[in-house]
Image (cartoon, one colour):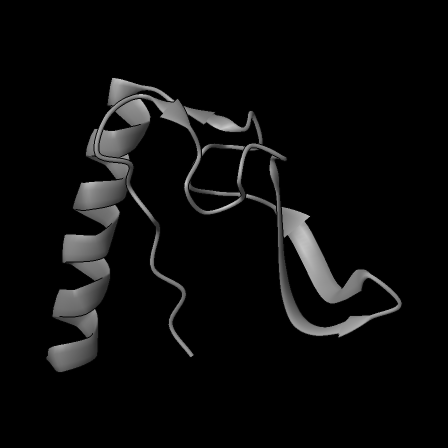
Length: 69
């Protein structure tokens, strides 16, 4: 599985983690995600700056090139 970053359209609350700074995946058991960790799209801050958005776009371009080559 490839986990691409989720760049925002404009600076503000992170679209991937919803502003929590923690990204969860897997099954939801008793209201808790099975796996979780810091959100790399916002570096755990819960907000994306213009610099974060540029970094996420660059990361996605790099990752997609790796997948298809």
